Image (tube, rainbow, N blue to C red; front, side):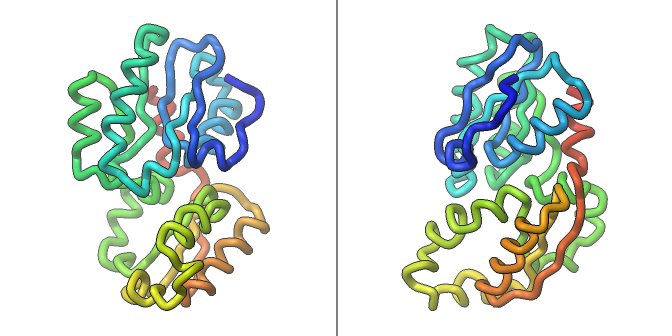
Length: 213
């Protein structure tokens, strides 16, 4: 695995190819690259390589299953096993069906917010979090690329109520203790007119899933 990650804009729009000579490939969303790289180093998982699909696919989740299938086909001959570091991520079960057809395992849960928070904790909150809008470390870094510009809020701020009028709180699920990212998340809450809450989650169930891999 490469010693350094590419720029965040590359992870957002371009994705990355695997590097290294591991036996297992982690095929991940670019939004998880920092966290997965940190876990590989922390745990000494030198048998794992990482490849990332563009994080911006989350804005068109119907494209995720085909993108994953294409990457699995591209890399399958090189690795003993491929693990897909995506949850359902808005695909309505289509990604799980694709992974089952391909014989590859993926992360359990509806989305990364749930597995960072911990699937049991997230489920237990239930309706209490129905009016929460979530950010992770990556989304705090890339708020404008994923939210402001795609929704046109930079050009038409009056659309804020149409998109976010039913939310009450922006919840920042923090993987790290980074004052700059916290400030960015707070600023995002202010711009959306939402209350702000920070939850220090660490890596949550992501580490558990990768440990199984």
